[in-house]
Image 1 (tube, rainbow, N blue to C red):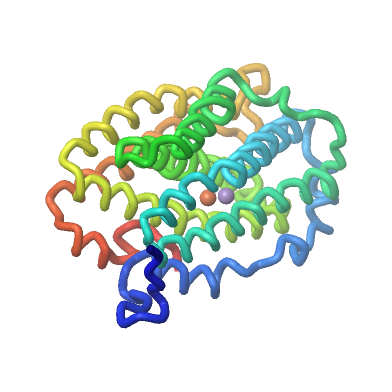
Image 2: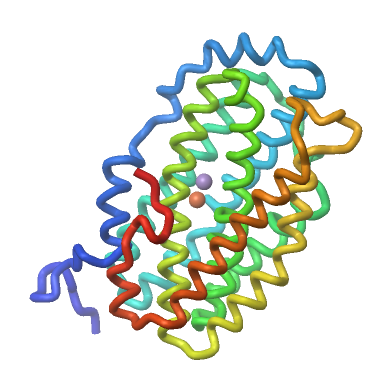
Length: 297
Ligand code: MN
Ligand code: FE2
């Protein structure tokens, strides 16, 4: 029988991390892609070299499909959390899904208004990219429809929050910052990336909390997390390699090794944070600070 939490003594627990993230999202996650001024971006686009345009277009095609994928694939996790009666977590996840939808909208807006591209740009998706976004991610998330076990939840969150968001998206922002932002180009797109990065810091913060909770609650989950991270790492590094192709003469003077190092650093930071959960108890995880899981502002 259903127990209604909000109208009983239990009420809503404002102190746990997901509820604090929910409160933050209501203030910080309300930016509107349509308010972003892309006038200067249109001018700047015309001034880029062919190799630079290719690079920005490839990066955007990876983000566009990536944002669409995370928008479509989150739902099974929201359902699992709801079935477990974790109302505060579900409330946070409503903001999470809405934000991914806005990220999808943002890149489409940029492609339509600035680049004016109407053709299929999935040609920019390499083998590793396809493996992660066409296979690993949807499969891990859809598995939750049949299987709500802690193991299945851990695999889903590792794929979605740690690899796709925590390693790849973070490296993608870095790619925009070290090219366009460094040269003061495309201020509209860069301001959108600033918003995205803040939204994503809450998503990754939630994922870190979820995995930490699962690790604390179940003896075997650390091994599941550890081995799934290791399974996905080579593909993630493969995607980073696909950001630049060798024939492009390194647009914006970029260095691929620097990108790989950046991605590895992100990956290691996620691993270290999760490993700390092994020594904690669940009550400590509930009260974990936003700062310790990297939530911005
Ligand atoms: Mn996103
Ligand atoms: Fe996200």
